[in-house]
Image 1 (tube, rainbow, N blue to C red):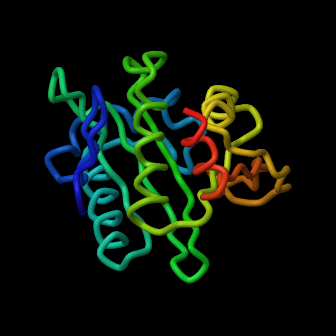
Image 2 (spheres, helix red, strand yellow; image 1 turned 30 degrees about the vertical axis):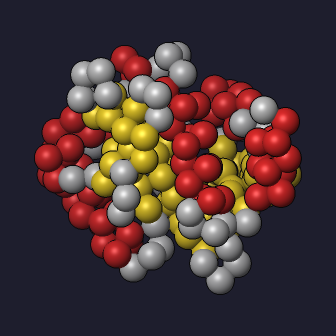
Length: 183
């Protein structure tokens, strides 16, 4: 897995040494509120998650990065492709930040680079994001990045033991190319 760089961030492979920091974030109810995990209760869960993601990455089914601040060299969150469908040239993105890093533009900066990587290096044609209707910060981020809201998927997936509704957002490669041309 390669390392990606932005002005303020480095997106690199998740490693076991990130587990303690990620446990701190993933045990925070506000951080995990819209994730498909319950808040973690031990660092061992974070290590297990990193191992599972690493295995999926080796199989070409997922690709998740730790988001590292260039200024502090601190892991501030994660982002990546939770599901990669190579046959249909599409992938689903996901992202999370530790609460102390919210509101600083880091998620937008990381996701922009992830989108660029998906379309230019991975050969994707479609990038999707599923978002709970109450998750307005994530909806705003996706709309800012030119994702289109396709509709509501009713009782689409189970989160924390309950079937929930999610909005499906997507960005196509041709739309991304048009946006890049206009910048």
